[in-house]
Length: 404
Image (cartoon, rainbow, N blue to C red; front, top):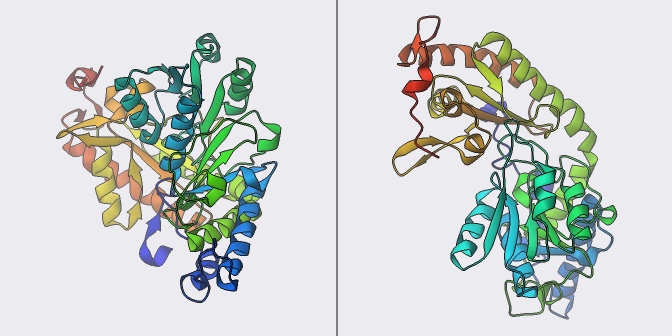
């Protein structure tokens, strides 16, 4: 990957594994049949889809391959899960989620609030952790579904979704988790879990974009989002994207093969990057829960400068990362995750997320460690909140908050 630069934005998307590409290519030309067709052209593709379904089942530790529903993406899976729970239980008008969910969940919840549903948003502390006592008190027979991410996409912080699912089950409430960032990085065993529904996105684990999964535990009441043909046992209409499904199956198999590497070697690269940057740059810190997070994710806050400026200069050096800030309505504001964790204004604007994959190397890590300090020094010289060797007195006052 070094020939094209250093890619450390794998929580945004991953490179499709060359082996995955090789597996899917024949299904664009040689094996092009519709898997619903009865002739040999369709039958060959149909058999390949069955294999892919079992491969995904194995990665998720699902009890049966019928619990795997192929979708177009994680967003579709999230929407299907939440809307299904509401349609299947029209007497229940409440939802529980968190303030740090992906927009795929938060935007839907905001829409549903306008439609008359009540949404409870669980807050987090300054390390991005939830208060389970608050959660327990919100569970009731008015709640249709709980939707909580397995791991946060910005900080990597894990939520105790298996424990929360057990609590929801005891209260008679459906539980869904957006596991887009977790699948393929940490072991999952759904047959031993109370989780009812789980979302997967293929392009986060070295499969193509445009393919996802909704895990649906057997026996859970379900209403499809898309109606039409009989595909996916009548639970998701539309001709199957055969090549992409087969690719996801192979990617799932490879994720299992590389799971130990992810949690040892990839984690070591993440830890070395943090160690190197924190040792050479003052006034910066790691956000989220350092003891309970994804092995590949480092989110570092650099105080008194803008994250976007860091990214632009990194990009000029061929290094790709991402920022926790987003440009909205012409004014720069920290991301909703940084706001929720109450990160100081002096730091919330300067967060940068570095997210690794098994294709990164320690050599690349050392190059990034060498590149970051001069970039930060250059930007701080231009900062009105930095005076020579350190910050101005009480610079927080200059960072007048634009959000509640």
